[in-house]
Image (tube, rainbow, N blue to C red; front, top):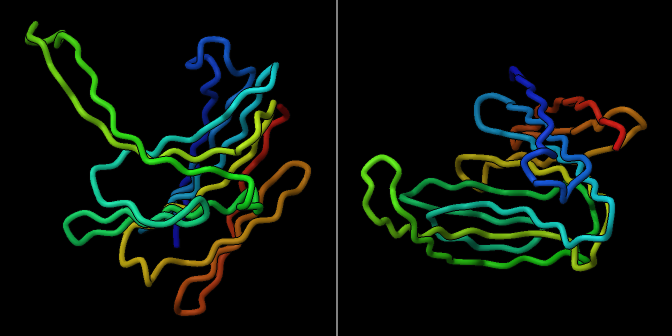
Length: 171
């Protein structure tokens, strides 16, 4: 499979709450997205990752499957490996605002599943593998972390294997 990788620095979007937030996206065509986040703060914080959805979410902090209209999205946390120290929450929120285009009041509801460590931390590195398609056909993804890279080893249900190397940043 072909792989496209994009990297960005999103720390400025968090108004000084984070000192670093590097995100690498590796799209393993046609149906797997690897998301590698490196996050740092200058003090202990409860960090969490929010995945907005409109489907039915089932699973836990290691593997969540979201289904809608016969389509499945499998969200797999690959790193960190420990799962007993992570929390998962399902949240529904409603926001009210005035539409800037129409100038009329709007009321919008969103649902999301949040994930994060139970304990406050100053730094976190997380690798997610997101597969779209039959959840029984999702690949197995394992990772090894080196000084300058994260290597994601992917094994497809048919036995084919590949590796994707993602560069790490100093945080």
